Amino acid sequence: MMGTTQEQGQRSGRGEHAWQDGQQQQYQHKAQQPLNPQQNQRLGQMESLKQSLQDFVWQENALLDEGRFDEWYELFAQDGLYWIPGESGQESPEGRMCIALENRMLMRLRIDRLSHHRAFSLQPGVRGLRVIQHPRVQSEHPDEDGCYTVRINLIYSEYQKQKTEVLPATASYRLRAVDQAWEIVEKRVDLLSVDGYLPTIQLFI
Image 1 (cartoon, rainbow, N blue to C red):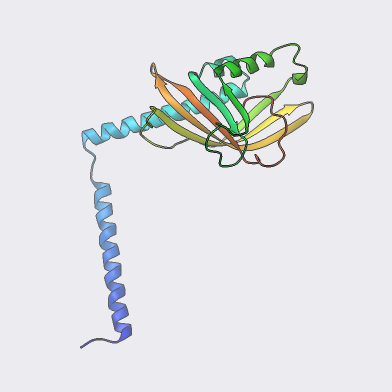
Image 2 (image 1 turned 135 degrees about the vertical axis):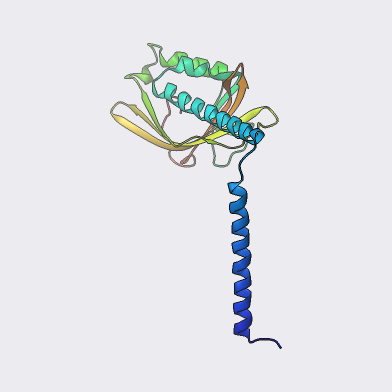
């Protein structure tokens, strides 16, 4: 004999709760299982890799904050690129407007200009400062070019002539291992207000 709708609902509810309890116990049992030596080694390698990538991004931002542009420049690969898209969601710099699009040669020219005594637009001196969130490593495996992607959200402030410009942004790095260190293959800075008013940006973000 079939029970009432209410009785059926109660039995169904008890069955669902029992299944959920069983799944939870199964997950807890798996979580409590100790890792074997190979798994522990793999986990340690992943954490070490992640920490190394994050430390590199922290150091890169510190060099910019301190105005150590020559040292910052040396972080870039020979084929390295620094660019700021000119529109939101821009996938590639090719054939599109960019606020900045610089290879190593153009970066070098801009760095030399920063210290040139005839760069009158940079007088009095320009200072920049960043507040960044914790770097996020996007994948534990490199892409087809051997690069790892790391992202940060940041607030960039640039000061000159008693005026401070503030620009929220997201920076994405493609980093490649070379000689037991990291080099920047690409640094992309997406400005939050890219489709609005933008001041002149004198320094690197």
